[in-house]
Length: 178
Image (cartoon, rainbow, N blue to C red):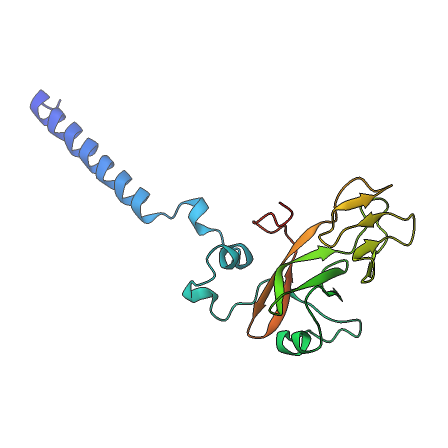
């Protein structure tokens, strides 16, 4: 039988060895949460000046009716402040907003009526979006002015990078409607 002195030494040896091994494994083994890939759309919208975002284009290209991608300089050359330009690219159309400058706004207004999902039309004379199906009307920022719709049109994020106009299917962080 082992002496009590040797059994204590053996216990301490195993105890310290197990502790050091546990710490080493925990330090070397990556955590499950750290191993997931980064969503570059979210990352580059939050940190646009990060070096990983220099050449990354978030979202999808905004295109015209013929599926030709919009280029910011060409679009701004043929539009004026206050224009709303129908753009495809997301699952449903959106309207790009041309602001004074002229420049393309950082948001687009969804063309999907909140009543029954029809595509609204921009009426420049009335400065309003009008639904051809049931007559809902929205102001120039997509707020309901006349029913039967009860909710404002959705907003989408617009990113202009390397002269490309891109649509991102999420609400802008900044509330432009006040």
